[in-house]
Length: 105
Image 1 (cartoon, one colour):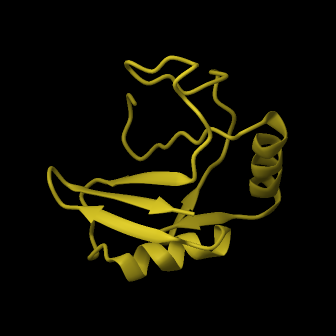
Image 2 (tube, rainbow, N blue to C red):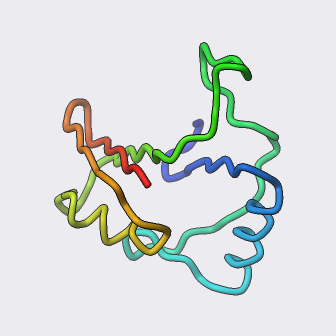
Image 3 (tube, one colour):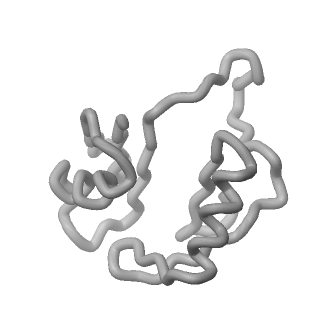
């Protein structure tokens, strides 16, 4: 991504994306205490190097990449952020080259 402090989210269908954008238009969303702005991308899909459409399927794992964290990133913090979106099955944190975490629903 060309600018930091941005994220891409790919929904299973356009209705999910519409619901997220409409909700954010009426309700301020905060991430780590900072207001988040939600908008549509110009792309229909998130393309990843080496991915083919056939190899990709729906999964229930979110990958978080946290750059320059101000606060300690723990499983409890990620659980608190993610649990309102659905039951969290497991969380793993990697601390190599910054902080990355995978959260499975």
